[in-house]
Length: 498
Image: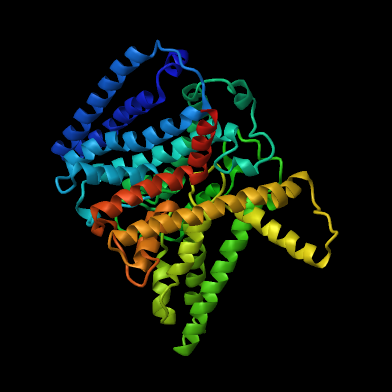
């Protein structure tokens, strides 16, 4: 069965899997008494599964060669067509959403961006929110699998900074296999751990008093770093639930937690991604706490120790959430304004989202390993100014990060910055102001949709965007998810062959 499935085009397999997943929100809608919504998902799911079965039978006998230059059209088709399939039951369930609006909603979900055009989430059926969360969860699973199966052999998507082989005998044995076969094999390794962690977080949150459906949505939003919730914000889930979510968010900081990945040879305190994240979260938390503390002394609240503790926890939780591009905002982050009289610094969260999480994780952004490599390069260049004949120290991998790895990270940072400039310019042409276009651009490229509500002086909303701006930002989400260098490398490689 696995061999037959490996001969079926990957896009057809994903359409069929999407159709089967639609049965879950269909059952949820029928249980909740939302029969029209249940029928919309049921009929769409059966139609997708039937069409995928016919296409699989018609195309499974065709032999395909494994060509890396075919990854560009494959990845582009998946990120454009799979959300289009997902949008069909969504548009049928919500009359206020046109099909093109539902397509944008599903692109935002599948890329784990978490942007939404739903202005009143509490009035939307729970089955719709479940489908949005499942789309984000599936998108997180896909990017994890694609990173190890497709991008790692090409040294792209952050793997250009990982000098050692990604790892595993699985990668070696499938080196010449078709992309679909590689994805299925790597997915079989990643899916059990990814599902098990989601289930474990769901159970823990439910045991800590979070309602079952909310706990499931929060678990999927945390593991996929999509931040998709059935309401406007995380809300007051309790300190215990927040600590558990905080612990699971750490998984998005380093590739060492990825199943089957050969990155566990280093102890935790020597993991460059984890140590960089710890330093960034600590510095941001101290800065935010000091800022609020200074403001609190002006209104004679500086000795309120409980308020200081809540502000510190709110800063740490929110900082880690945006560093992983999840976008959860702690209630104490917002309530600290009452204590200090100062508005929370949203621009700091924009910088955190830009830095992003670990390589080969569900987080977006520039990636912590690139930040670490650039830091090592800056340190080496500063020392070389004092000692011109100095040689770069450390082990072989550290020297690689400070030289060739840092140059690769600098190239990506420049391409990322140029892409930001282009997207901002297009949004300016669409009629946005400079500040608003910059916030939306960073949120789209970093795959941190909730950022738009907290980065500026006033909250911004995706639903207020016009059609041209939505089209530009939809493409930006896809570019941010797969990284611009992936597309450039694949396109240039294909052009060189011709």
